[in-house]
Length: 217
Image (tube, rainbow, N blue to C red; front, side, top):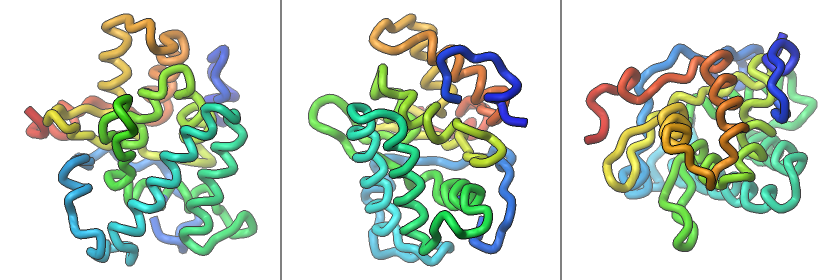
């Protein structure tokens, strides 16, 4: 049973090789998304999955762009777009058996590479999870609408540790906790509190200090 069926969270609409039929959210480990370091890496480097860094970057750019469009068009678009981008990238479709768990497994295998580039003067280079929160009132489009929609159907890992442009290390949980501690009214605090409960309870969200104690400053 999913968290949407078991938890009363008002307001929430709430990727392992292709051969894997079922995926589970992995045990948290130290996975670092060094945003500047990653973007400086050779895009032609072939990763263990067989894809190049450049190919994953292109996919990440499409997904980051989709979040911007979905913030205007609605959550239904992000669900369709994210699925389609990852399915097409891997040569799968919605008739592929267990395609949802394959998508999650693909994400989990490449989690540290999903980086959104800076956008004007509004956003720094960010991991996609952090960027989704930084989109403010539209964060639920990408997170609650897709990544956190069903922990059994889509067991996405949320425990990547971002090293930002200043050298600060943080996970999605750290980022949310910092916003809540500030009481920053520029963010939808009620939704963030509810989302925090979801990622801790159902996705085993952890702080960077626990996952990668030597990361960052």
